[in-house]
Image 1 (cartoon, rainbow over the protein chains, first blue to last red):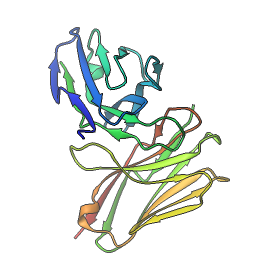
Image 2 (image 1 turned 45 degrees about the vertical axis):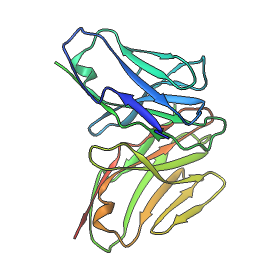
Image 3 (image 1 turned 90 degrees about the horizontal axis):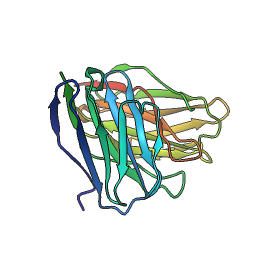
Image 4 (image 1 turned 60 degrees about the horizontal axis):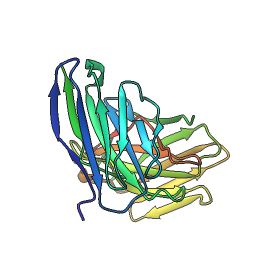
Length: 114
Length: 111
């Protein structure tokens, strides 16, 4: 099993450009998450999907949109990138059926917005 | 929402000594507390977790304690080794699907 995979691994954008970060999991998990990680800020939740067909805002959703394409895939879109969105983005998944489920993280996408 | 505070932000210990990292949380509904280790350039990985109905859990050199009354939980690493050097994150999960993370502790084990 590949676990949680993310593409791309690195990306450089110019201010105003758009892009989509892709995430897929092969563990048959119900819940999927998008986080951003900035120095000294820990992991902050952008959006999550508790189950296929649902999405909810997290702590820092402004400037982002998400799509839960199916049970396996959860994408994050930046419509008009800004330098403040320079960060490392992690996708994660968990079984989600109870409160005691480990989150598994993808390898991350390092995004730089110039 | 939940607020998780983590201390210290950096910690240096001599090899073989113990390391303790502390976290506090604000939402009394939180009932699951995982700890993640993140090596440089890698993804966070779960190292230990504890549920709210348990006061302490051990796994070899790692242990976690939980004080629900005081709303704090701690990670204890004994007999530290250089490969323990990493950033450690605590997290809390209230009812629902959101996890709230602390800001991380950078642990350096000096050989």
